[in-house]
Image (cartoon, rainbow, N blue to C red; front, side):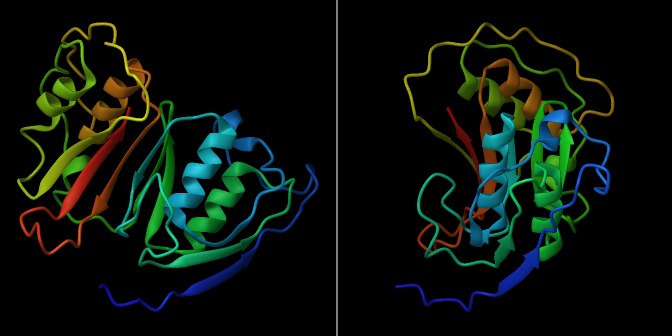
Length: 222
């Protein structure tokens, strides 16, 4: 049985500002929606971002530093929890700012159609930051296309997994496309999954000693 970790509780209050007072960052209009009534006490930043993406109606990619269960209870998950007091009129973007301020291991970006939450201090050569220099592969199923795309970039310690949450039909065939020169592997994954109608992907570390060869899982929810 895993020993319980000490959970750091971080408190941050998001002040309710009138529209004329608020300093709203220049970002997608969907992230300027008010969050409404939402409880975000004792929550991991990946969970905060998944919930806020659902309110915004945007797909989300979470590169977690904690061994989380993306689609299950996280009460036993090791990690730093944030304790946010959120005013109903606070914007989604401002709550994202508050979440990563409370846990500065993370940063967030809105790129293309995707909300991204990722480690702030990524090492040089971090796989998802690598430039994607080949073509985006063709195919009619998400799995083979993603495996073909990531195969030459991800180290052997990374494992790609797919979580089936519905009967997922074949996608419209994806023809080979040469990505722009500045496209990273992260953004190439976005492009493929967006065209396939997928709304979530993420990465998480693995601390299961029974599988010592795998340190990171790239998980895609279909």
